[in-house]
Image (cartoon, rainbow, N blue to C red):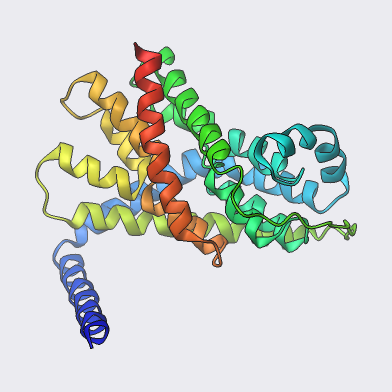
Length: 298
């Protein structure tokens, strides 16, 4: 009975929320248009140039036997450290250059080619939430380069520690036999564009939510934005009239968590992912990142 009441109340809350936002959109159309324009511009200038070529190149690698050669050379050490297949190296190394949700795209490519199991895909997600260095350094350009690089290194180290913590997590390493496929260029391009459009859609969705909320305090609004969509939150940190060190800590927290926008993007690419475990890993990453950053700053 309690479960039924909870379900009914939850449904009503969702419907009321939708109605409220629909009304806000009608009342504040100008805000919505500006948000869509600015978000699309940010996506086009920063995200597309960084992700489009990498998505296409990695699709070629996965669909050719080149991935076997790369992982056979470099994947064995990764296998010993994190107790994953050699293909885990492919996902992790590329995540250091292209970030997330690219890591989910690479994992999906491996799943589609039967190179990893669904359990291993969940495990890899836990510690491959890295970021494109050029994009992050650009967003953090209001800091000096030393601070920006320190924040980036903090995120990388915290993810490595998360990976080691989850090293003995239940996993199935499948004995995959790679079947060389004909490379379908139009299909690769279509999948890449679909993924980029999905990223744009989620960015717009979360930015509209933040900008429609009647929050006047800029710091509170930025913190909310940081847990929803980090690109805009990091970009807007420079306008906050707060202590520089607090800006650094907030940057570390936002990047460690990833933002619900990125979570949704990953979920869209990998609909069968274990989101509960992923969310726990991001909360753990926040705690680890703060400790590491404090040590590096000491």
